[in-house]
Image (cartoon, rainbow, N blue to C red):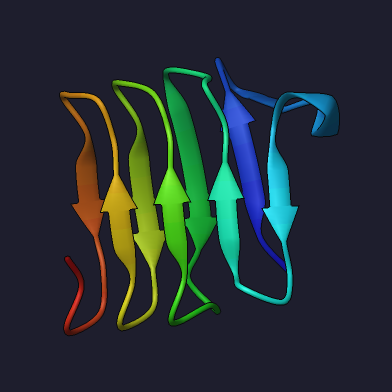
Length: 75
């Protein structure tokens, strides 16, 4: 299971799209904390000022000022 919070509260599911088959998260929201530490091979499309915790082999398409704590082979 993953968690997505914004300003200390769980992000409403209507504000993001998670595609389980491609492991792709898409959102225009900023200031998110995303914990996908049990997930590898994911793609993240987000706004700015996000913090990520993920497994290996992930791809990030973000705007700016993001922090990453990831496994290996992430782009």
